[in-house]
Image (spheres, rainbow, N blue to C red):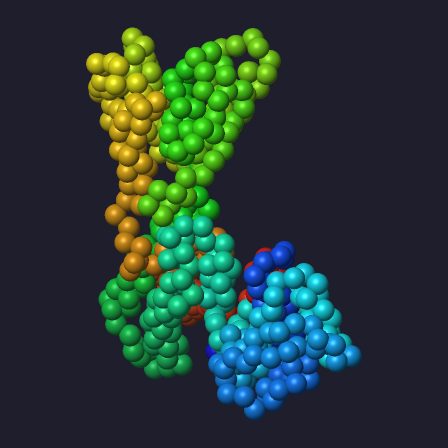
Length: 473
């Protein structure tokens, strides 16, 4: 699978050479600090031999996926700790190499002594992401699955976890492979025609070819369109809470969070700076931003806070425009302002929030935007706002079955694929020469192959992907 990537002289070949992948590597795989246990990972051709001499048990002949209890000593024979050693034989580990995991007490001193002893036995400290890199190099994972490992570690919500886990299990790779095989079939027919160009033989029906390209193009576009949702789930959705002073913005933030995070006061202009907190709603991470009340003011500090509020509106994905329902004319003016925001920022989703509805008979009328009436102080209808926020992000997406793209590198490759297929489709429709159509199809195949690593990937890209991993993974 990776023969093209690993060919001598290829970019991945040089990248791997700089990593000295023939070495046996070691690293602590658990966070630093004092705790119950730490895990030290060892992988490479001498992993079992190195640990064997420190553990005084025959690990080289131990069955794979077995755990052994005993004393671990240093090179001077002095006891370091009582440990559990997990054995993974060659070809049966995460990396595909001989691997050992040492579970010890989580004293920083003990971990340091184990790493020192392993170093004296010829193991070197692993680079960031090197264990996962070796899994990729040995065909245990493709490149998109390797990236999913980092996403799974970083997942903060169920939806982010599910997307990363599906990608790690190969759901995304399988879909890409299916599309790429269709394009390979297409390219083979066109290439065959080129071989018999002088005989003017047509092996592929142009109508069927156009239908095939259209089918693949539709699926690629669906994946591209899923990125907005995937990116929101992966990184969180910035939500700016905006409005005039004393509309209840800070009270709403506190109510959503279930804690007194922002200072609440009847004095106008209490919030002088933006306050940011996160909230998990139905597996989606929302980054709530309580902003300073927007109004004309000569007070310098408040004016600076208001300007930051405007910056946060520009940076947000969803804007909650709050209206004080007890102030005559306030709902109507806020609706107009919200509508103007959608014109100025068409990429943003705007919700009109009518606050203090428990002490007002006013309603929000003539508003085509999503809107909700609530009482931030008592919590009345807060759940309605949460449901509306989740619906705006999720829509009708089915996260259990649908392929959701959450990686910018994948998005860029899919967009290059889309462009190449669009050129191929235009070529088929206009009757352009088959060799030009084949060129576009090959370009689309290369872009898809770059996602999984079936086609050569630039050294800089590989370095960027694996360098972001933590040591020990």
